[in-house]
Image (tube, rainbow, N blue to C red):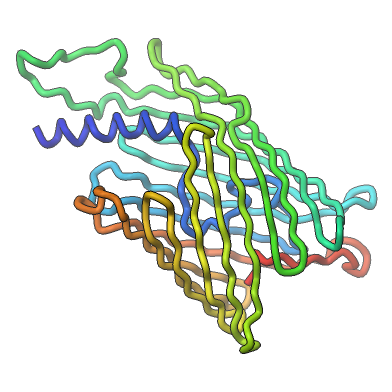
Length: 314
């Protein structure tokens, strides 16, 4: 009975969650803005590569596990600045698995003393449902087959698009993006259809230099919405000597977060722990997240005249 309950909960949860919001949840969103907004690609003068892993709701069978790798860099073409990026994403959620491969392009323009990026993303989405993992108890009260529930592994795929705007100037940044613009349908077997719903993102952050020259406060906000429902994260990190940081965050109606990290030359490492503030905390010890970022300075253009610093780099 318990196994059947777990199967029902996670199949139902996956169906609801993936229709409501397809993209992954990351507490270290500030280190992975190009996952949510293609206009971030090439916004700095550096080649950046980021890997991030998240284990959601530790202790629950079939809980979400998310992993992505992204890289982006600027380049010059016909005297104009552009950005390109690649994103590889994988997530398992109950009996669902989805994989995304995305290519990003962003046009850059200096504006009001800062840098504006306008980005486009094209993605190949692949969705898999493991129908063989569905458990239905054998009893007079349960039907062993249902045309609406595949009993074997089924897969669907589609082309997807995203658009974004991103502006950074001196010590602050702001961005707006929309993913799954066409809400592509994926046929999964004969009787199942899956589609990701269009999602909107608003992001912003500011670096505040404190009286102590070694300390910098970095508040940020991250809003995600499907119109019918909206969530937002508020985060503040205290950075010491641009090398070490710790922070606290709050996700409305979901969790409180603690973040830690350090920078060693070209490499940054970070960790986040989420403590749920809803009733789900009765069954989980929380969520864990790790990221690794590599930054290599480039010199696009003659004399690197267009070098632009972004607050995304501590």
